[in-house]
Image: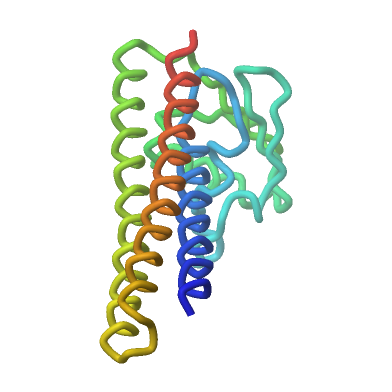
Length: 185
């Protein structure tokens, strides 16, 4: 019973780490990456749709993203979505292709992005700790119902702490790597 709870906790914590990594992929560094815009929501015929479903996104140069819509008629709404996003990028289009020039980051913008990474790290840690809390509550309930012994509860609690620490450390390493990427000139 404890093993099932621990494997459930591990699966949910892996999910939190995965969501954290995807979240950080959208934070721009000094170089172009399709992850910056692929999750951007575009109002396409009244339906919010992810940009990656509407266009091909490529990186022809380190400081340039190109977006080629599958439907040339959607180029205007894609451009509008990019302008209104918090990316701070200015798209230019030639009727068939949108070009996004990725400017070098200023020192001020780098420090803002590092703060944002720290905020997202805290959110990821909270998500991991929430999983720990939920599993611990389940263990307490099982102990009260006499489904597990007191010894099994404390052993399970220690194992849960180890799993939690592992995933918190993993989140911190991912955060440090992203910070290094942002600070890199």
